[in-house]
Image (cartoon, rainbow, N blue to C red):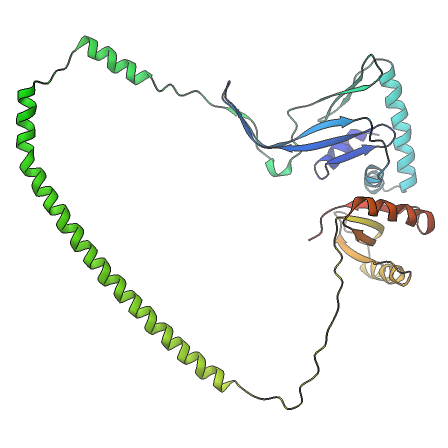
Length: 317
């Protein structure tokens, strides 16, 4: 069983994927960054870590394997347990366990698991297609150095007499240009004020005409109901939360409707949450906003109603 393939699939959608009795892979989003030393741009990504302390079976991995391989949930749990024993014996022999596209696991001298992630893998779906790239540095001193070298070879000087003459010759033109600029500014301001005044007047007239037409239409459409029906009030409870206890998935939608009715008769807040990627209509016992409450409900349901019930973590809009 290629368990790393299933883990890799789940890391795109979840922040924590637990391998029961072994440990959990965790992801954390980091923003895009620029390495100034080598001018490299790194896109946003999910950084992967491993926690050996998280070994409790949350049902996510087993449920996914059961769904993909079309096997019972209990069989999937047994397959995972068998694979974990094989992994532990492999690490105990001093070998390095490679999870393709995830990272490498190895035991240290204290018998603890060390994890080295693969940095070229990005499980952030929002950054799909983005890769790191390098840019060349911009040297802003090149042209300044060239000008300085030219000044050393060919000195350029301007005599005071010639500069005074040029400035004197330019003064009349500057005066004329300043007068023309002031005239244009005053004329443009006057035209702009007149145009704005005309636009405001037009808008006000159009608004008054629209209001008169609206009043006429309202008067024409006004009528009185002698015996109005009493107002009806419906109280609809909207279920929220991304933690869902799955009761089953059905190819035929009518069967899913019957399942919802049966569970509601038992007192559950059952409902349909949509169609999964295999075209099956999913039915839940209930949905929860808190993960701890969902786990407590899942244990109770497995003990008293359905041993194959499992928990799905997904935002439903």
